[in-house]
Image 1 (cartoon, rainbow, N blue to C red):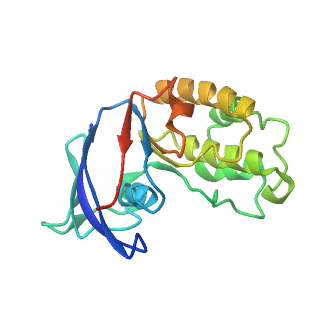
Image 2: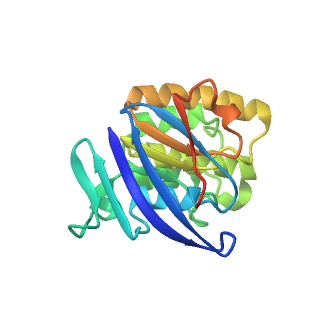
Length: 207
């Protein structure tokens, strides 16, 4: 169970605004997060990941306190050990597909399984510059899953994929999520694309 109650001032949202989220995410659930541009969806994921901090907030994960601004508790991203798929992929330009996966884990069987799920098993020696945008996006997703995280945060993870590839990948990822028993938060501009696997939707709008 992830319990979140945070407030964060935003810049650039109609001049100014405040992101407020109070929600509980059940263990093993998939949540589609959506809302207007500039409402703070990406900021929310970064707060959960420990990459940015709110002015006020409390985040607990399975009764462990990750963030408590009142008590000045704020675990580092490394301590939170979650998987994060960034909008810009955040790939290393000089690393091959295999090296990206090995950067996260030494489990060859798990790497092979993920690469097959993401249809990158024939591109293992390719660096990002030689991959399409959709292939880069899939690599970013697979790398995030390589550490077998209990919490997975995904920021517009399917935006570069065509409809067929997207649907096939979502089905494959659903199986991976269930295997890992991961709690998954997905920011998407189109929550309908996750209708087959999402347990709930969370609408975010700055006030």
